[in-house]
Amino acid sequence: MPIWKNWAGNQKSSPSVVERPSSESEVIAVVRRAVNSKQRVKVVGSGHSFTGIAVPDEIMIDLSKLNRIVDVDRARGLVTVQAGIVLSDLNAHLEAQSLSMPNLGDVTYQTLAGAVSTSTHGTGLQRTGLAAQIDSLRLITATGETLVCSTEQNQDVFHCGRVSLGALGVITEVTLRVVPAFNLRAVEQPMRIDYVLDNFSRLIEENDFFEFYWVPHTKWALTKANNVTLDPVDSPGRFRTWYNKMFLENYAFGVLCRIGRLFPQLIPRLATILPSTGRNEYVNISHRIFSSKRLVKFYEMEYSIALDSLAPALREVMKMVDDRGFRVSFPVEVRCTDGDDIPFSTSTGRRSAYIAVHMFKGSKYSEYFAAVEAILRKYEGRPHWGKIHNLDASDISSLYPEYQRFIEVRNQLDPEGVFTNDYLRRVLGR
Image 1 (tube, one colour):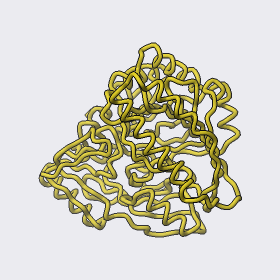
Image 2 (tube, rainbow, N blue to C red):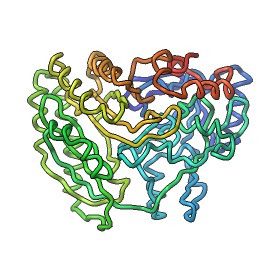
Image 3 (cartoon, rainbow, N blue to C red):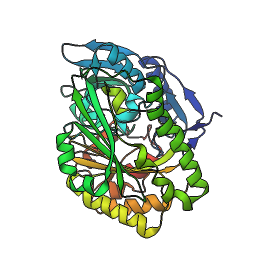
Image 4 (cartoon, helix red, strand yellow):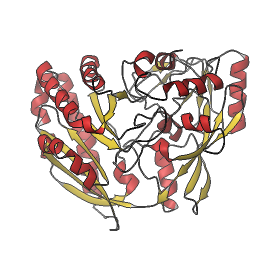
């Protein structure tokens, strides 16, 4: 039997069948065979979820062959693509057409379907997550039926299906709203964490895209302010680009993490190295600023909270890390987005801040993550669907105003649980 595992290696399974369809008709045939044999089906993307959301128990569908650009409608600002396309490839195609996605996360080896289905969001107070960029989608249901879903057709399915958790069927095609290509001026610099928290509202209002990383065991934050500019792309030397983006953020940081895993008592001292990297400013096309390579593997938990709760919640996390004596080598990431109306979006109904904690692969993380989770739950935190958390349906149902509406659509489309697995049973109740 083939072994499937996710990027971080903390989720594994041995599906009985692996299918790699190259057309929508082949996807339909796989689903119908599964229904006839009473087997469950899961679609896997690039495996970047840390939870078991995509773990295939029986039949695994790999959509990597469904990775084409179907149509570009420049007049309407729409691009239709097959759901298995990887975001980095999509960005390259858009760049060639002088187009861009309005917002992106910092990881682009996700598939498009996987990114939207788990509420991947990026940052920027005037922007939403990726799922809110969807204009329409095609969905294969448990009966093998193809639904075209938009604000005009199958409205309820569209409303819920933009963040579907993979529970409603197989998304085969997505039409996205895109914008003319734009450049960003990035300014990356350390700031005192107290200054960042005291001025957080101003920083996110004054910058098109702002995020920061608190460095545990220090009083510093590494900030990233990205603003739309008409200035041309810089042409920095290859060595400078490699040094800043590959050596410092991956190779050197990876060495520090490995030392910290072997000698946890050194982590507070090692942490002081990170804020010393200094100020860095450059201009590039948006998708190259939003995203960067991640060669250092880790485990991650992320919670969304109301924007106004960011400063008090993070200060509680900071105090807890010191009080409990945790040794944390990875910075704590903070981002924000505007709200949206998607039932299972982690920013549904509210402007949101996101606090993400990480631990180096191979390190013990459960106690640290649980302590952070306990704090963020006090702020009505919503866990990222693809990142580690301990909540179940009884917890989650109270966090989403339209939770029951999603459940009703799911029960209508997949009453027998063809697309379910252990994780979905935990968060959806069956």
